[in-house]
Length: 200
Image (tube, rainbow, N blue to C red):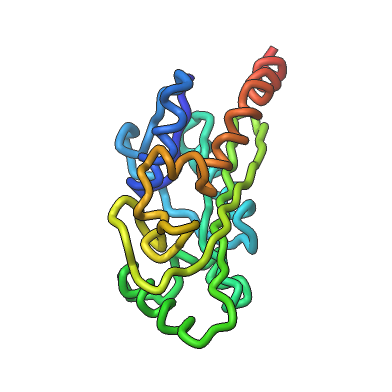
């Protein structure tokens, strides 16, 4: 079975592929199609809404079952921000610079609690769709540590380690994206059965 991953983020492709490939799923990415995937304006107010917009667009342009995710970090002291605006937070800064600015703003905060959220949506050419969501709770560290992650991973701490200090396999087991993908895998067989029945 072929599934198109609607993202330009190479790190997300690696994480999603690591979990899907062992399940006999042929992963198709933008590098495999003839033209670049058009950009999607993320107008949703929730992670689930934005994931659907991206999956719907990918399915329309490729004709394949398409999976897309929308994810971000929600910081308690910032009233849940940056949330769905995580990728657009502090525009013009690199992620290491963003991480330094976040830690600076939290110096006198009463709490450093935060959570990652990931919504994954799959859309089939016949219009069938479903969305799952996973979360990872932790706190913001006092320094950037680790080189295995990306984005905000070097400052997002679970227990004694930041996500960027974890082995990829350990990260997959507990991460927001890993949890969402586990739910996705559970739902997928019934979803495919529905699609097959609808086509008959």
